[in-house]
Picture 1 (cartoon, rainbow, N blue to C red):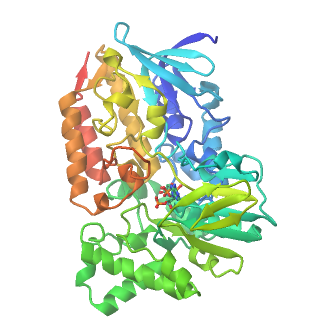
Picture 2: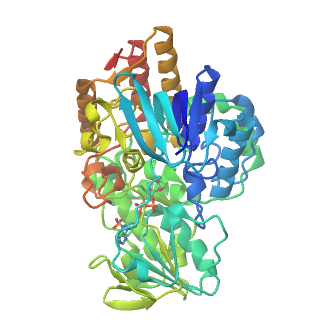
Picture 3: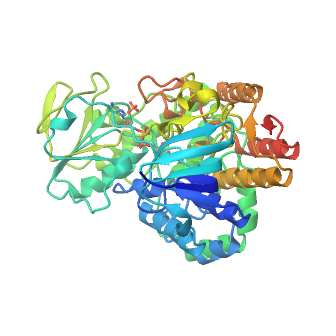
Length: 531
Ligand code: NA7
């Protein structure tokens, strides 16, 4: 049995949220310990090493803003950074601020129990045990992979991969017959790259997804220099944007359904050519008006038909559901890849994957043979990693029990009955609907301010009240209900995981959220009970 170590704060996770928490809390003199199950820092970007993995927020914006010297010294090489470059950036941050010395790697939290008498958390891991006043869960929104329970999976004699748990060693598919199951963002990025290697690639699609060209390219040195000169203003401008991202296209209040044909086509063409998420923000009512949404969806379907040579493949790839209701995708030659002779698309919308066999899989009433299976089947998003920690709060109640009807937080930061637990970009906060690093910085700074204020006022416990959390959950839902988001089966709703309660988990709209958090802090943490 390992030893018991005492500290002020345990931070779980050494991704961008964990690293910044360690940095800020140590700066304030807290004795802080980081726990990370991987062998290195980077979180999401440590695990998601699949071919083609790339951030779809532009590199100059997907980076920390807290240190001007760090901002100036780091040089990005592409418009959108690939996974290896983002991982290097995370490692650079960790080295530069000497954060690694605070982290225990290869350490998985197995349980976290709150002791009401001592007001401390006991965090048990596969190695040592830690006792701390505060527990900060920086466990990521997309970190618990979803590998469906496919019948026969253990029998397959070839190689099996999940995009979110890609091996560290180089995987070479040259000369191999490869299956990719899934057509979400990860698959949309991986498929064109795997197709360059594999002798045969078969994609199993349950639901087609909308994707828009990213138009990735080497980063223009002049753009990088200009951005760095104006970084402070640009970051500030992003913080008052709903998406937390600034685009060359200014926000507008225009309606797609009211635009005349030539204006509509010109605007959509321009954004399609420019690439990136600015496409999805061409008209302000894409997310709230079904007619406008359908007009934009039809534009993308038209593009798919133009790109994909085989009419039947084009028909299968063309989604019919609401656009940008599930997380929209950005790609590099995704649809074009299906024009290659050796790439096939199999529609499994009716029966799904029937069975994994010794030599391949059975789907759409056919047997297929493969050397490798790649599952790009996503994540138990937003709550998976938190629930996996087996957290027990007051009265011996578990987080799983408390969240059986869906996650219940106040501000996505605190949970009633779980004092001194903070969730970084937790459910109920904008998180995945905004620029994650910006959202992380806002949360971690809020937590830092809170711990400093508690220390100044001699408080040892903080707990969200049940009323504040109930009102907050209602608020998150009522904001979502004004949009088209709840109308489709997305992971935002937990709909991708069989049996998971369907509740819209992220809060739409970053700026009012950040204001609300500030207001709560200014009013001496109203909605929380301090003890
Ligand atoms: P996603 O977006 O959840 O995509 C998962 C894909 O896997 C999607 O096409 C699913 O089809 C498919 N899937 C899931 N389960 C099955 C089963 N049982 N059988 C066949 N196909 C299945 O995950 P990603 O990793 O691509 O992206 C996650 C986020 O990471 C992304 O949104 C970005 O924010 C970054 P479905 O649509 O459910 O029919």
